[in-house]
Length: 181
Image (cartoon, rainbow, N blue to C red; front, side, top):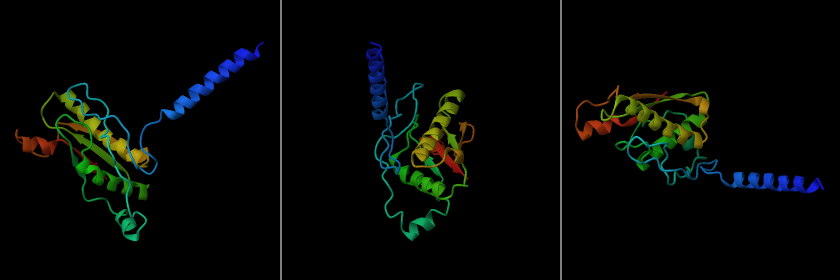
């Protein structure tokens, strides 16, 4: 009668394997969608990043012109964020996709993602927010097929502002991630 407990254990193990296999989230290998949580809550509890929504696959990437474009570093090297947010704005998805295409086409290329914030908030909070922003970009690139060995993250928080002043215009220029090749 030892067979019954063995069969029961096998059934439980098989159920766990099936459930674990079905619980996968995230984008497809070719980047069609990115099913993540939206990291848009306010305050110190903001965690993770992601944008939710479609990131779209590239069209015409098999053409000669698309391949030529992948051999040059994309022109847009800075993306901007909303106040106290670490999610990539839709308007910058195409710029980040261009960096993903470049990095996939050039496996020896390396990028350092510099996360920045405006001066509002404590120094410690801003260092963490800058890192969350850079990691959000890193996760996006990784989902698009960029090797983790090609990317590193540095947070400068509020320490290296792009614009000085205490206006919303200056603040919005300082909430950014810079691609540094």
